[in-house]
Image (cartoon, rainbow, N blue to C red; front, side, top):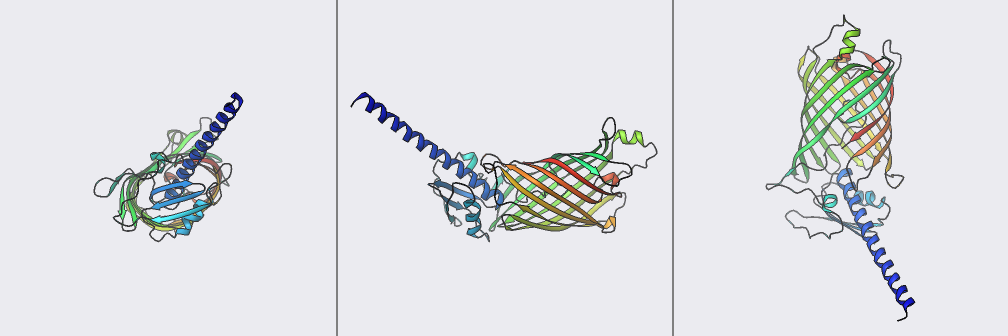
Length: 368
């Protein structure tokens, strides 16, 4: 063989190898992405997922009442997946060893402990409420109070999360025990030192369950509320409340389509100081674009939350949010949301719960 022919053959072989490696990498990426979509958005447990030549082969643990076409619809929106084949793993059956196309951290279902318990589940069964001002998460936002005699520009900072700790199978669905913790603070941005006005602390256990597109959570929580030092110095004659209470609430959520979520429920305060009326109700809707833009990383979202409390004579508390969500489910379940918000109702900040406010805001929100 002449040297130039040998060089050409070698180059062709290298290109073929590179193309094969590239295809394998793309298939692995798509498999990881598809696994995250099924587990996060549909609440199903993926036993095995392989992608080859645009065809996704999916094995799930329990479909429950989740139709196969929801999986097909969710995955065929991913660029690079043209067809989906879904198989349900029968109870007691062993899954075939998956091909090593996806790193275990991306594609493997969390290992269950003996007895069917799963320690530190990857996915929270009851997703966070995007427009609820009292959803524990990490965020920073600016709010403009409308028609308020004292406050104009207010900063909000929240720290917290709901952490799944233990889970397992529950018939055709799953159950999960978790813990929520949150800190909610507001600051007067018109004051020279951005005075701290109020901080609320939230903590308590949660019990959640999911079957197909239905999920529910029961939350037992404690809240205590504290005025900021700068606020007390500015208002020396203020009558501070030693406000704290324990309560329980129950919420049910339905996802009839991947782009729509509806939820509702109510709660009762178990112990309060000072005495407060005990009942509350809540409901809402969330919309999520079925299409993500810019390399499948930017997704438009919108949400609306309605709440009402006996203590405030059942007057409405309206909260809305709209913006974009930044995501990369193939690598992480973390989501970053940039949202414009609107709120009208009694203040959700403990010491000011009797004040009626209306505000516009913009902020960045992190969900892990």
